[in-house]
Length: 478
Image (tube, rainbow, N blue to C red; front, side, top):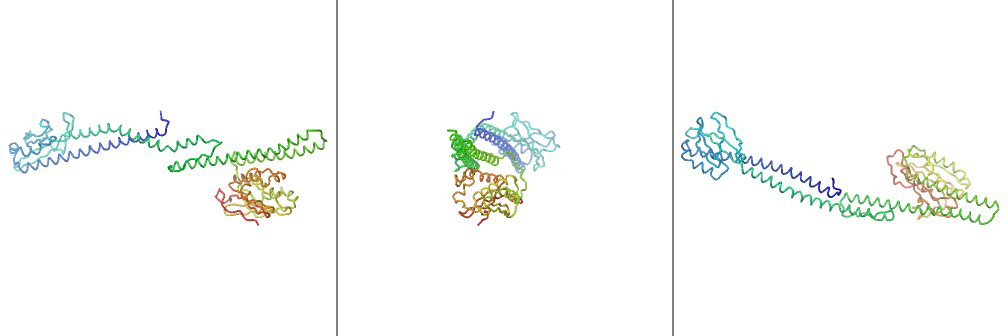
């Protein structure tokens, strides 16, 4: 069963990896030590064999001297308990002339006279330790030939290797416990910011989205995570506040016509009235209901544009032709106010034709409603390098600067009472902004008091690869 805590998992993982690493290192060290001991044994055996050969050539002239004066050779063997020296003559069978060392009773294999000698031979002692044997034929000054057999008992090397293995097996659990404990502590300490994140996440709710993650003193990965969570909380806070404001505005907008309808109905039903008066009240109520129906329709459209359920299939749209169609629909409204509608320039965009018509229609409707009678409303199309601009400009009272940033908020009106009298719902510009956002564009406004107001739609150029809106300023209309 896997542990549920991440710190325990990482601690166990570090411990397992450390165990594998220690075992690999111990195996490598064992092989290296064994190889070096083997090399040292060969070199020591060769060196001692060379010393014995030198003594025989310098001080002993015949086999008789070896038997009668063995002290020179004995001095080289005594004190080295791991060496055993055996000297044989060249007869058949060979006769033993001398046998010195700790393993004098050890029977070593003796090669025949004509048998080629091996450099080294490995044997096993009665105790199971390795014995390394070297052979050397030496010709004395008398011309006699002898055979030197020198053996090296490697019991000390085996003991050293066994001690190394034993100490490794004893120390390995202690090392793993130490590494595992340190690894768990380091991981537990490193995950401390995540516990802080958890505490903040437990406190976040729709009523309080003001909490933020601490980003100072964090590693880069957790700092990025904290920034992302803070950005998410900031967006959620803004969306919840916008939703709350929208609910308040919606309740306020619906309350006024509902109160009007209820008041008119209650006053009318308070006493008997002539049929003509009932008809007049019903006509007034019908107008209020039509405004409510328009508001609900615009809210549903705004919701569908803000959160489309399916990806829209955009196609090429001729903005000049769509502006011409919208202008023809508002020709009678402009004629009532003796206003002239003009369309200048050309341009194309990628988008939904009906939605683009809706955006142009909302802007043109506002331009005619708030424009000066007898003036000209201009729809101007301008193509830039990476976007296409469609501006709707009217002459009129203009809009104060402090109102410009909030014009595209839902239910926001510069003059609430006058807008209601003119039939506005406060959703038209919000719909325009949502449509432009859906098309990857933007909408901007420019106004000067008692001169003009111009709303500009910016569409990404069909030939441009840019999706987001650029920072080109709206053209000035003066």
